[in-house]
Image (cartoon, rainbow, N blue to C red; front, side):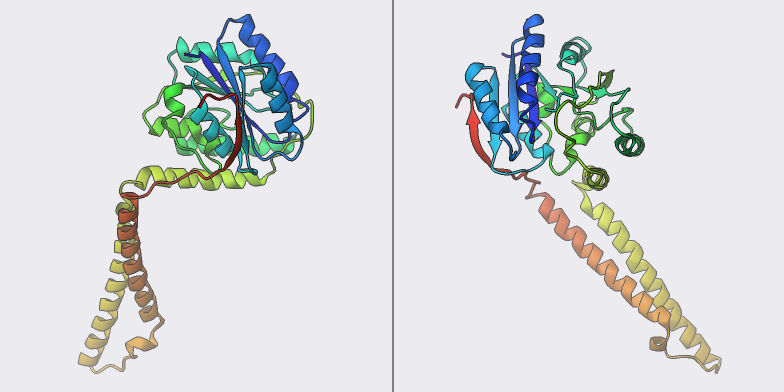
Length: 320
């Protein structure tokens, strides 16, 4: 069995691929590792796939997966994880900002330190403030919500035991929350290693500020799904009960107030003339709807799971 699988998502990185491949090969041979290098071409519109093909013809360790279009980093990692067969799976970006020289240290932490996941921490970064400041804020909020004490959830350089990547499902922007997904699936020994961050040598960053917004939305989503996936009625039922009970109490109060006023001979308003009546009516209706949502969600959770959708156009150097 292979010792290491290196999984590298690729999107328009034709200049860096030959150098990255040579660098990884040198590190692996210097340390006597058996390995495979899996490139996932995520719908690049440059010559990335042609470069991967040429590299695969030279070296059997180089393998490639070609998506029919751009599906995102999470889909690329998921495809690579499904194909990986090494005892330890290393992920890194293709832009040469992640140093392959970190691989032996990451491998050692997983195999000798018995970690399930080891996340890289780019303590000293070569990025503009427009990336570093939002990243620090994002990491702080993620640490607070997840309870995992990592400094850099966004770092693409990570190491996993093979069992971890075979037992998690990632989609959307979930690739930055793999440590959180691993923890929730019973792989709780999560470590961190300070890694070298290289200045970008070719091209430009493919990620904009919108990734942070998408990341926060996915963090809320994955937190909600983890807590209520098997018991959605607990969430919707609570909200429905609160809303229905609020509307019921308001309605009873309006009725009591009118009956009491009539018994005393006071002049009272019609119940339907009071804005509070319509608030109570809305609360009752919303409560019933939330209950129905909970019941439907309970039925769906027993029959459906979230599927990752992507189309693979071609594969090279994989055994079928």
